[in-house]
Image (cartoon, rainbow, N blue to C red):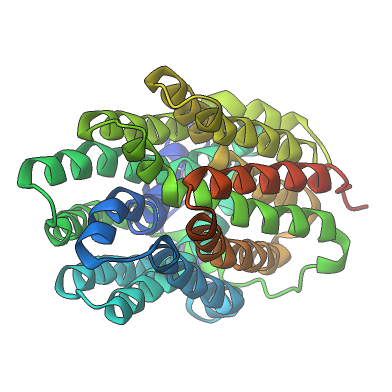
Length: 396
């Protein structure tokens, strides 16, 4: 390990750790909040322009999730070899490049290839960023749960920024202008990526040293629940804008709905960090899964604008706190040298779930002729995941 003379001194608690985590949070803001989730805002216009079925539209997120899954398989080994910061930065660059590719492609397979690259880059940036954030939290245990939640609120920023821009841009320019929206998102992501430089420093070398394998057989309930979470939440984040549009709400309502998801996600550290810090075993994970399921179910009960906004607030405040709960469990139960392996294993399981989720639920929607059938299926998956996750015990 490099000596202190070779690396920048780590900030003292209270002086800069939140700034570093906020910088790290820009990676999932780009890789997930924009590159993955903004597709839901573009799906109706792309589907109408390109003549896709719902299953074909779902394939765009399945391809993204497949790249995410394959990246998660090798992320911990790449981090151990290259350093976490380098992996995070490279993954973020791949995400920005993929957004640019979506501007130039109009054929189904070209767009799916771009989405695959986005998933691969998003996985690298998310896993590596999560490892770095866990190390920051370890150095400041009194604020550890809050700092982890702050990192996992990062996608909320990307969701918010895309939510206030894409629907209004599409409305202003008119139908079949989705390529311009991809270009705007690429430029926005490029600008945000410049903030990652604030996270360079000592944590990169420390995070790259551990290669201990995680005891995956002892966290099967958590892995199983996380698989169901991946399959369930992604349906909401893929098809809900189409649901809002089909319910008769225009561009401004869509912007309100999507932006509120992002704002709620950004507020989640202040809402749920005490739960992450105080609840042992799989209780925090299960509780947050259950609340996420409630948020996902509300639009099926009523498609009125108040119900949709409540759904956005509830779902947005919890769905990435579920992810934070898995990292909090890892940090609480495993040595630092096993963190990359454990986070990678969880991300692989999550990736499998969100790979099969969009295309399966899209196919179910085509079969039934209604989005409600697929969206109710996602609610059931989230409830099942909460029931399995509660069985996870802390490791001795």
